[in-house]
Length: 145
Image (tube, rainbow, N blue to C red; front, side, top):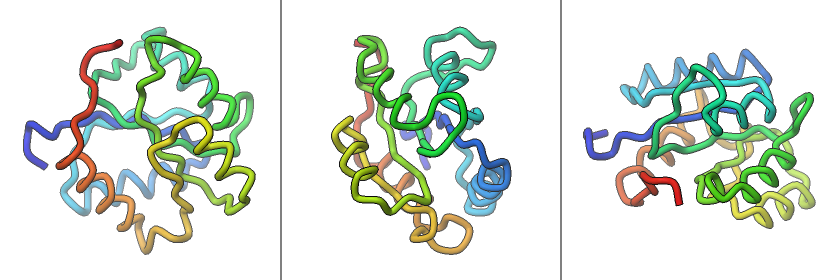
């Protein structure tokens, strides 16, 4: 990715194995986007609201698991969409759930995409292709609304 396509990533995933697999996949494919990872929605909100020592500058994308402790992905989406400073956040759901009700609930909260981990190919190759292409052609918000 060229410098003008620099995008920060917030990975909201409670599975350490999946988080590490994402990191390795990005490194292996030469994608060096800054990445912050957190275990659940409570931690993600703290990062997004600047309440942590983990600065997440804009522009950013959020990769969000649904099934997490404390605050799950759909609850986090609701909080993001209600917060005037965060409501324009670009969120991709990254989950194992194929449930139609989860898909409907996620798209009802205006996610950019719903991705099932098992469909992304070995080492998350499909996700890397998607994020790379997305960042090349989409203009992301850089200032809070």
